[in-house]
Length: 271
Image 1 (tube, rainbow, N blue to C red):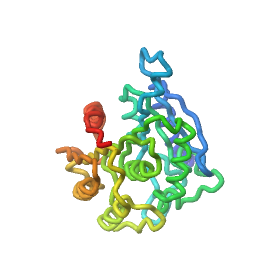
Image 2 (image 1 turned 90 degrees about the vertical axis):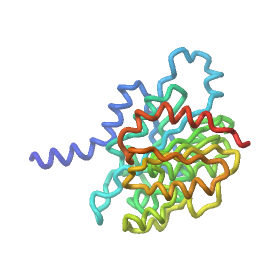
Image 3 (image 1 turned 45 degrees about the vertical axis):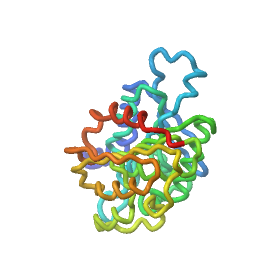
Image 4 (image 1 turned 180 degrees about the horizontal axis):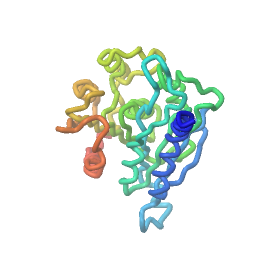
């Protein structure tokens, strides 16, 4: 009986944990359709004193993209629900004083049983054209086409930030934290099964020159090779690479987040 209760708790824990965290920070939860998938969205509470709505909607909207969550339970067994247990990007959004939203992936956040959802969408096809197109469509529903966007992603969320930025001219800047920007290299380094149905930022042309990029990685990251991030940034026309001493993959980005947002804002506009 105790084992069954533990299993049931594990099933409901991921999204309920995000809801609780969002509630503590007075974030609003909603769902929006992409192409064929629903996406859970958390919106940050408007900053104190932000009474001029017209002015507020002209400011760049920060879009937070989470990492891959938990695609696998073990090497040959996929997770039924890949929703992240530790939502780093939601925590970082809580520190952001500007307008911001957290955009979930297809089939995450309790939607893993939706029509069209299958384990491939959080394993080998996690960065696929279907995923990118649906997230792009969701963003177009969430913000007017002329609203400037800044995409911010951790780990696999950084992968998607770069891939989505290619598709949306309204994206003005991208910031990645420990971003998986060379998927093939990451697969080889860890001995993983190739993500055969996924796009790979390192195998695509450089992003447009007017798009500001800041690619940050911890010097002690044991998941993403800092050299791979540096190589990706070196190929881009308007990118800065930053390796943080003593920083790992997941922990402790909150202490650095305000200064990283300031660094991104100070990057020159090459356009």
